[in-house]
Image (tube, rainbow, N blue to C red):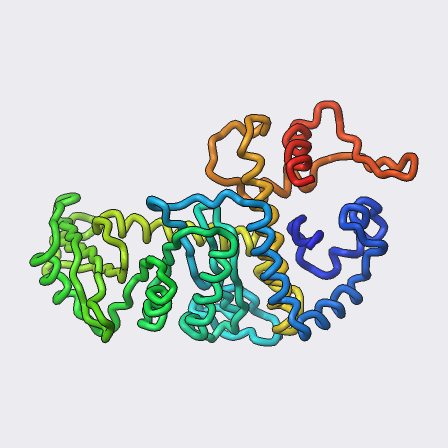
Length: 380
């Protein structure tokens, strides 16, 4: 965890810290293990259920800190679930196979809570595994974790890879609102254009481009028909202004339980794309895209540890926004993980040992010291 909070994920990164007194003192451990020992202990922990324990404690920490979790619509807190391929090509790691992005690697699934994007669940999967594989169980687990972290109404948002009646049933059973993009499969774009012209509201956004937005209801074998929001775009000109002999039709449809207008539902689903930024921060800023072990279960444990570290760094970043003492004056909804690591984790200081006590001595003109001290006392 100490390594991951510095954006270091390789086992060998522990070696320079074995002689660093601050690292062991801050983590309250008597000795820092060597790289082989660290690898062996994680291999052992992966076999004995550490991953489940880490996830439970990570969610419990969010609840204990009384983290501010911002809703996206009225009092609904978003729960974004998505798969993000990890490129581990040119390796022989267990579980590496071709992902839907056509690269060899893993296809882990993540669940993020709130506009801040706190991680409440993760599962490492083989690259070839379909998005919907084992997702009903993962979804139920994610909802339970989200409710432990924040006692509020949830809005589940998922892309077309999760278009399954099983997911909708779980959302209904758990009393969660949902927006799930539909997979058209064998449905015809022309048929949807006919429906859109009959039930939708047309707006001509530019010359030769008409957009129809509206709603309809479809039977899916449940007690009541399900509401479907559609956005159908009809283009009669291409990008260069050439008249098309056959109009180009683009169709987006969404399952939803919300009673809001089609425009608002579509906007809320588009905000689901923000989760791609959270994936990026885990993969690049925590340096987790190429997982460190050759064993699948160990990599799964490392991924769980990384999500806990991600939550800690996210919390520190959000706390830094709560006062005007931060040197960064630009208004922001959240701090990127890289910014937190650079300004709060790797803050320059000198470790002083005096009278059997350790102290940190900061420079007179350390710009982040005031923010660091405020957050430190807040947690203490």
